Picture 1 (cartoon, rainbow, N blue to C red):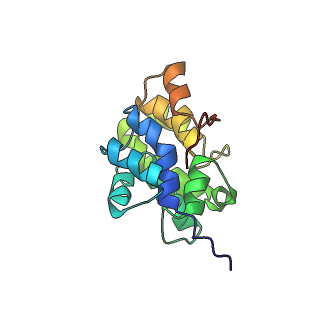
Picture 2: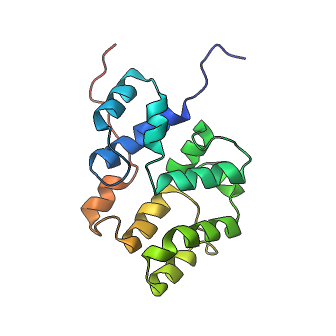
Length: 165
């Protein structure tokens, strides 16, 4: 075993969730504390509570964890699966994803929109951030349907402009 500390899934979640949260698209309040935690690379119990306020992301995390027999929805592998994709997405069966989508979004969607979202599960959709942003959020009205909003919420490359320490 190496002397490296275990990878922190909560911190990974915070790093990906920070910008959409800061822009007001999702999650709870605590932008400043979250930013500081990311800079200091230290997670906390308060961050775990903050993560649960992501009504889009957190249920997907729970679904991925449960389907793969992992007890913590904020396990690093689960968080990576949701934001970037990994083999854990293949562990989520069609029926659990379909049922989760129906339970969560039926009250918020018209019958036609619900049918479109539910139809994505048998077509191969995965409980993945891009699916939620580009398919579910558009149909629920959780995000304004504009290229700018969708672009602000998607995961993309960044460029490090400076580093200190």
